[in-house]
Length: 439
Image (cartoon, one colour):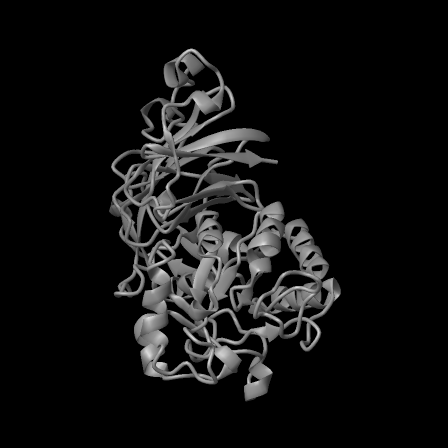
């Protein structure tokens, strides 16, 4: 089945204020959102078309990719910073793109981090010419080292649910004229394959046919094929998780290492847990949210972690939510039983004059625009407003009238903060803000 199952039924029922009725099973999903498979789109060489063409294509469908930059090839640093600010992953593809990047593992990481600001800096590397450099140096600087087709090295081109056997040799299938994946059907066929196997597929693209590619001139790919693949993924978003390579790697490593420990809920009609692991290092805190479900017959719930409101849903006898490892106690309350006492209840609707002066326009909200300081806010393919890099910061979501529809705080690397009616919203993180559109 598509989850990691942790039995908590044997724990003394006194751990739960609500008693034995809540000593049930908690489950961590194999893939985010309890999807059946994962896919990562990676782009090599830092081509101009990655900024001008790939970025807008991914934005259209609410997905994010990994862009691997060659430092000495004069990439559009401001353009790639813009992609980072939208939630994409910027990664290393060496300094010089020589035959083997040995000796450039740490220096390319440092050089890109001097130009691109994103949470954790650079945690993923893709090897030029598919040649694996010093694996020890790779693992000291990155959580992922990407090769090319696994089949070129006697491996599978797709990975299983636990990722590769060696995180310094993560396979990705070549796309385009010289690659194995050329058409939309090629991409969707590969995604269908990992849906069936509960696995993970990664794609390796250089430039695009008929676009400005700079040095990324090997095996050009039809951008329409990727557009069609993303459209299919959005239509099948309940089954396939599309996310950057480094983020999928964090999820896998956390899921394999995490434990759910029951806690005292402190009140009736309440369940409480903690989600923990001990794998944080000097590359990553490994605080990407994991998807969890808890079996329950409650019809309406309120979920918080360390007091912060979490998006949740009840479906098919389960409570679903995403939580961050090592970020504090998770409390699930029966909202039908005691809504008046819930700290996670929705805030009162504020009038526009209370939050935006005399104007009802979101542009009048008293805040400044994002400055690119590790922060990103966007609407994903599932219709959630997502923020990145806001750990410890207050988050407020306003609707188009300037009314507050959500208050919470940042917990981990990434966080779903709101989903609701279609329309424009403003996400305020600290004193910075960005307008987003739920379509």
